[in-house]
Image (cartoon, rainbow, N blue to C red; front, side):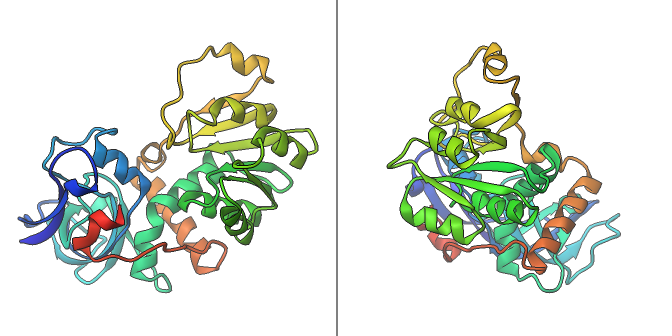
Length: 309
């Protein structure tokens, strides 16, 4: 048995409760983990509220954790009992003491990366990796706009994009968040509580616009994000914390400068084992060298998952 957090019904944090659950022995291609740290991400709220579909409640929650391999199923050749591993993949249910998972979704955690850091970095860090290196390969001299720049993904994007030689324009809601974004590599910080971000971005880019705009906010920012991109620039919509973007006429992309638009998801960028391993190795290397520093915003016992939310 294991203790795990269960969503009893879609809704608020009060619907999260700690229960005893059975942990099956690993089958072929599976391992059982004793989890040492679990990541909490904004996307977990979408699953808790039913905005993103999950198995019907009662169901597990969470998709990111670090742990130690306790048992190995048949056919698993590259993992052994005692290995430290991390993951950010379905099936959901990471808020748990122990789990049995497919070995193909796990990556080994190298020396020099703590369990807590590994649990806090996988989803956000792998998201930043594909956005900066594969959705758009950021080059020295380019300008990038990062919405929600003081959030988990945003801070990593700011640090890593700056390391790659880009000029980083951070869009945030408060002066405190602006200071945090600057501490993490932003060259300019636009505070939306007191200024319109499109004119501010245009000023920061000398009127040219940005090579790429990373927008995880969605409904409230999307149309304005199009106005922040340079002609033939790219707008990357990778979240919708303010709500879904309404349907629009693709001709708008032409009118605003022959823009490119993409709506990527992490799962599509780590869909194969080689892609997952390569992306993870790049992320681990960036963290070990100090290029990217992972900020842990809070620590909670498993029983206080509702307070974490």
